[in-house]
Image (tube, rainbow, N blue to C red; front, side):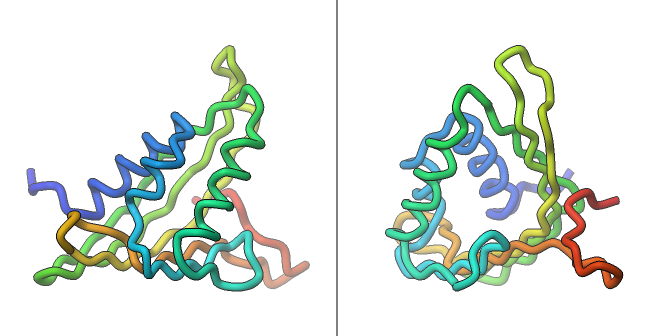
Length: 142
């Protein structure tokens, strides 16, 4: 079995931070010079301050729900101090009794660099394909 890549480590830490709503752990995955093209934002987010505001709003708005993040089709490339990765993430909202309330899929691509504090994401892009007929986002991917 191949050794985990920085992207594999990112996915696991991302899922843990989301599940526990740990804003500090979530932000620790990202470089201060972060640029995010988020499928839920019209304009790119630049830096950790708007990313922190997004995370605080997301986690704070969950009420009693827990979000479980899983992934599939993960691929990574590592070259020296740079790494890229892409995967399909599933975000499932669970009620306190464990019942899945809803879920959706996102396509994720990241670029990471290794620095003194370890590997950090400096570019992230999430998306969903758009159905040609009706121009609606497809949030359940095969």
